[in-house]
Image 1 (tube, rainbow, N blue to C red):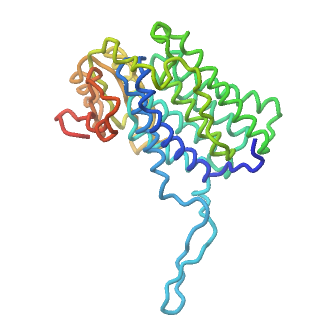
Image 2: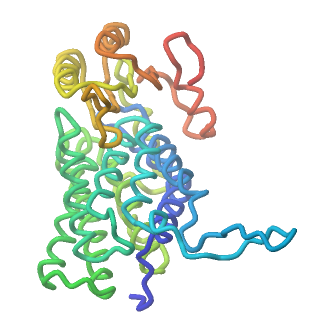
Image 3: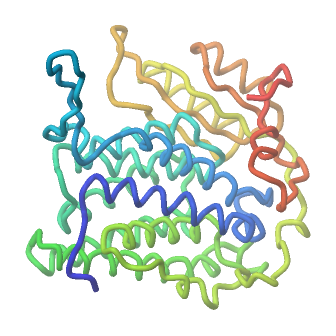
Length: 366
């Protein structure tokens, strides 16, 4: 383990940048084993695009020093001044990334990652560096929020991987009595990634569809990759590509499992909408009756003057029209998209093509 650890806001930017690159490299294989909750072969693409939104939201955010303008006679100089505290607040930086991810989240996996990131940022607010106690708190908050965002959460998915990582980090923190040293942070990160790997392996026996196909859960593998990128960014170590060795279905020569399975009819509906807590509860209940894979999570934490909050909504339904009509009866949605679950997906197609497959109700590209 490296002794020089960078656990500041700059490391968080590196984390998401590494995750964007790594998921881009692994998206095809993640798509190939994506058979749950539907065999639509897009988990890798959805995670990549969502993480990309988070990473790119931070590209123009300085986290070290600030260049201040200074007029010297007729010359305008720029001198290096003290950093903006908000730009070096680990929680604030991740909250900005999380909101961008939530606004542009794709699919089940992308939406759950966005929920995870937004929630993880909350315990870190006001802190300039990550520590073992803060990591444990962030991972615990994130996994609880992700489980609660789904109306019908299922073990054996990326939720289980999040939970395992959080429990492992908490165990290290407890064992070291809340020690906030870099050494203990390194131990906690190692434990979180190790537990995430074990949870990925277990997914194959937790879900009948995965057991029958003899593969691990695609979203779980994606979450493992993301957590290993966090470890790498903070500890200054290489990514652990050997983590994936032996995972069933993950050999590069393995077939695209999802292509041989029956496709679900229906569509995926996603939007952002401002709702009161009562209307949000009503929408969740009605969508639960109407479809499956219902995910609802707040975007940002502040209510407007009428007490309404912004929500990101995701659901799989047989027919988009009733779901969209229900949503519009409660408020005015933005970023409304409808994607066919059964639409053939070319795993070799570029991500611009994946973007084009998300359309609004008028058939226009989103």
